[in-house]
Image 1 (cartoon, one colour):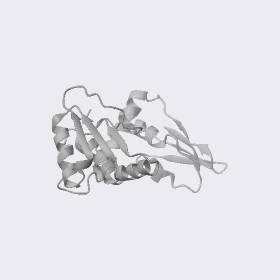
Image 2 (cartoon, rainbow, N blue to C red):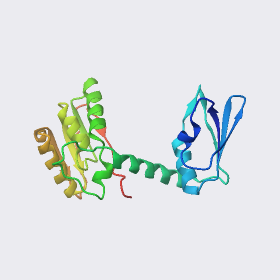
Image 3 (cartoon, helix red, strand yellow):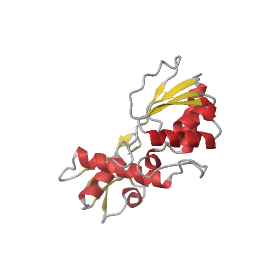
Length: 201
């Protein structure tokens, strides 16, 4: 693997992570090379995507090339690692399952931030079409929005309802779904919010 365009002031080994990196300077710009396992190379390709310095993107070359499937898998693994370290619900009396809800749950601070943006734009109602354990729906309700919460899994609907009770916003959320299709009237100009589960699959 070769990574070019690294500025001389940067701690390149810290950015690039594990590996026997050989670093050379070329007119004040650094080039790093290392032999990496395929999975490690795919993970690094994903981490370095869209990173640049001084208006110039890093040049990342892998030989032989890693395919898109390996890079997508690395992206999912990286997201899982971050979620394991990120607080979902702050209140520990909430219900979550290990199969999807714990991994797919939007961290509470991020969900509240999105809800605040919605209210700042004048949104008063929202349809959360993949409610899961209720993280986003609860955040919207905490900011004063009325929420229609939909999921095709009855267990997760019960989780979401319990969690809304914990956060004292149950009266702002209406639940629909459970193994059947649901028709929802347009929420009077409010948006349809989609954050599908992605955790274990």
